[in-house]
Amino acid sequence: MTPTPLEQRPIKPAPGKGAQIVGGLVVLVLLGGCLAGAVAFLFRGGSSSKPPADRSLEARAMCETFVKRQLKAPATAKFSDESSAKVSDVEYTAGGSVDSQNSFGALLRSTFACDLTYDAAKQEWTSKSVSVVPA
Image (cartoon, rainbow, N blue to C red):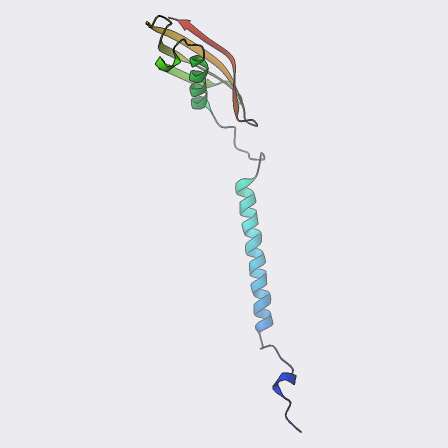
């Protein structure tokens, strides 16, 4: 019997290699599933069970913006004694005092109050009412 050339000999896989490949694939699939589950848990949309954020500090800052729109010299405004509170999931109230110059350049103190609404979908604040009254 003549020896078969190397090119024509049947190739036999090494014993145990198939089991290692299948085991590796199973591990990869499991890791991928765990990773996908973790990502879905961290980034799930509106199905979160946590309550809406308290945006009282943002409401205070937005109230200042709305008050400045009503002042004669908004660049001179100095705010003090400010407070803000969450009324509902989307409604806030804020108020305090503001010192600013009038049209004659005299410094006047006024009290202010704002009722605000926050639209989370649009990420936008709306003023329901803004009151600025000289003290």
